[in-house]
Image (cartoon, rainbow, N blue to C red; front, side, top):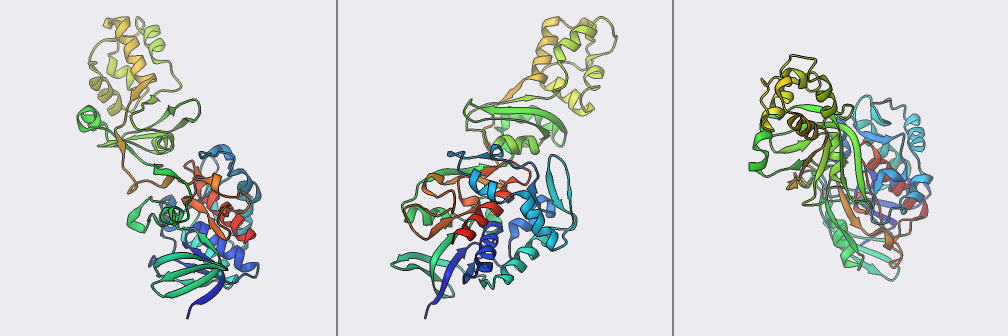
Length: 398
């Protein structure tokens, strides 16, 4: 015998629990299905275990999509202040780190417990760990074949996420369902991910691994150009840190990144202006502006001797050094992939969905929310805000 519900939500992550709790508290009978052993592992590990759960400065410009206006409706109807009001009811302490990023004071477990409690208030039924074997459309709803038996629901919400971090359970389930129902998918790729370089070209920078500094970084075309000032981290395989995670969402294969390692200084102009006034060597001068190990390593990697006296350097070489620091162009050969990506960019084409309800226009009663949808936020809490907003939009519409 199958069990009958008003709503079935597949995926008990941030968006799924939000949607289930909202629909349940509106009086709908809701079942929440997830294949994982542990609830909401992606929330648990986010923000170093403290969950960067939203950003006070959230606006549609912080999101990438082939259909950039789509996210406006949901984001305007469920704001960071709305989520903070929910946290206040549960007396969850939090703090702002920087640039509007909000984190739990204690741990991400506070967010998970709150969402679980909200689902319980809505009398949501749990099926976990339960795997979904198939989904089919019936005249009056959906039939879901699971490892725990059949479930029937009048409405079906897919909240199973994207492809990022497969070791904690990410799958392509949402995209398989989309293909089954003839819904277009924008090709998914890793986002908020470290970028890598081929071993030979990166060899000279390997000694700089572990060094971090604030930089300007940009890439992309006029239509979608990313430009950030954030911390950069050199690694043995390439570049990471917030600057690179941010720009990775805009980076396309075989395109260059432009980095300014000293964004507050015109290096060539400064070197030329002090050339005849100081008797220091090049290494001592550059180490006034950069971490000492980076200053020496950078000079060597670009064929400058740290021991060379500034006064003896030709102007042309000083300009070349300034250009290398203020406009360093590098072309990654790839990324660390979905195993290290915080989110998936691309996914369900939003032109197939209602921006009010998240329902598939051509398939009544079928909804997609959260990371599976082609709406991807910047680093800094924006993707969780999309989960809360898209989950709420669907939960209120069902």
